Length: 267
Ligand SMILES: NC(=O)c1ccc[n+]([C@@H]2O[C@H](COP(=O)([O-])OP(=O)(O)OC[C@H]3O[C@@H](n4cnc5c(N)ncnc54)[C@H](O)[C@@H]3O)[C@@H](O)[C@H]2O)c1
Image (spheres, rainbow, N blue to C red):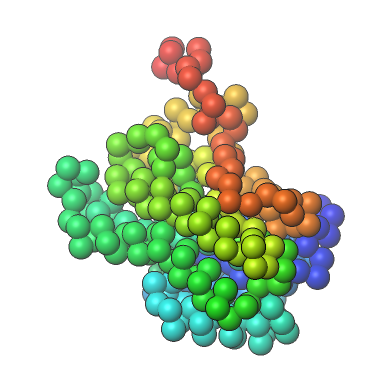
């Protein structure tokens, strides 16, 4: 159902790999709500992912961009503005990857070169994207930037490994850049801290299935789905949330405020 919340708005969506990706659901909902969008992902993801199918369905284009490469980000913004016919109003950063997690290295035996790569891809890319947009003045006043994060930035989830530090860095960039972008352009910058969600990145974390069930039982509303995360992103891109900035917003069915409940005690 559309309320045309994003009528006339233009956006760039990073991170749709396949139909399980949270960014995939966000792209669909943004278009449903009247936005015009450009999709982007790393060149390698374009080869083995399904993003071109999404572009066809949503009648838009895919611009390849490795989010760790400043030149590619500049090209992305230039080509997006050409395609959309002007500056953008919103950006979704839905990017995460850890080689140490992928290779199942234990937290007490991490490869630090891989760790730097993880931080670059999963967190510093957020600063890169904002810095390029800021310098190019590519985002309209009162625009909205959202990145997806996870509660391991605040609490310990041992198997989330170095992604915890990536998310802490990501959330800090939202606060710091949110200050500068707010002062200059009234652009707001927030992170949405999402429930465990069955996706390629999510399922790559050791013990994901049992943790997913635990979080689902512990949350009074159950785990938030990718579709409901997409609804929240739409709200954050719309004009109904203009005064929210520099926040980390939990979208987790209440999990982050729980201590214990009967279901968790019994299982
Ligand atoms: N799935 C979960 O449980 C969960 C929970 C909270 C937050 N998140 C976050 O949501 C975001 C989206 O992840 P997802 O769960 O939809 O998984 P996903 O695997 O579908 O998406 C991750 C995306 O990152 C992209 N990417 C990797 N390296 C890149 C690079 N160098 N340049 C550009 N893009 C690159 C991948 O191609 C992929 O599209 C991530 O930030 C993730 O940490 C996920």
